[in-house]
Image (cartoon, rainbow, N blue to C red; front, side, top):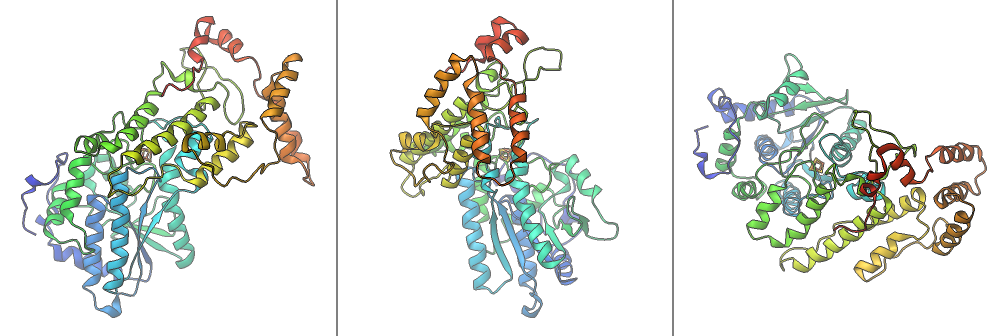
Length: 494
Ligand code: SF4
């Protein structure tokens, strides 16, 4: 393949390495793919992120298989893309329409490609964890999102195919020249004498990386010279890069850097300090995205150690106990989001959704930032884990959106706001924390009618073992009187 002037494609960080095309021709690479495809009947699953590398890998495979005689194209190639449900809007549109094109063109040309989107389970979604469970916004040290939003959905698909077909080959657009770590990880799993590597998780899955020796220039050079076979324009992809800076790779294990420092990721990502991609898109004329960026920036600001205590509770979510820092700084470890803050986040998210939709250009489809099933799951979690007798989710939804969803009324047969007020009075007159009584009553309610009630004693024991001291007292004891204000939540700061 001839060298190509890449001065008119997006700026890419300069990578070291010799062009793959100095050693092998494009034909050699296509031949290798054909041989691998014909070697056995293991199904192929391609991880497609919509970025330059996975587009190159998929395009190479598409052309290689299309050039085979029809009677040899007898193995399905599954193309999977993960949609975290919080993807940057323009990127997700690009991926969705690409997957549609792949299926349409494959059918038209009678080729064995099938494209699928893989999404997190509702229970694992970004909002259910952030707002429902109160997980803090992800950062480099607590990056809870990658596994739940990207790795697990792709793994489920691979596992499903393994159980249907015994073994599968996963194809990735990974390149050794991306980084020294990437090179190291790829070499660690290599199988001597084979073009396949071991999958880091599944014994019955193998990995094939057809562009592992490509440099970034090789990738762009290929994309600019070889037409996209499913009707997309690789120049549009290049334009997207110019706006977004970099891509988020298809993540299959926690060693993959995910999108921590590249920006084809989630619009909510707080792992990076700034969302340059979204800022670029806004600067280029997509001003309707501004409310999204404001929301993300606010989330990011809650990670500042100075203000963290305002938004976080002191008790651990699972054990309910307060723990002191062990790093010598003194003070209390901030835990999950405070319940009041979770409610404000939900309110703010719905307001953001309304605002974005009111600014959308006519040709953009209405955006749903949080799905109905996520709202229902958050409601369930709040009722169960936060003793939300007021049933806040339907109320907040109606307040902001001006309409009701079809909620199941009193699905837990739970208490209401009226009982909460009465209980508060009674508990206070007996100097008992009302939340403790609420939790005990909820525990009883959740076990009501069960034949075997043995587990209720453990649950009651767990509740009683939680720290029920007055928060001000705990702060004063642990951090000193002066710090009490630092932990006070003043209501929506957004
Ligand atoms: S883009 Fe950010 S928020 Fe999304 S999965 Fe990657 S690290 Fe997590």
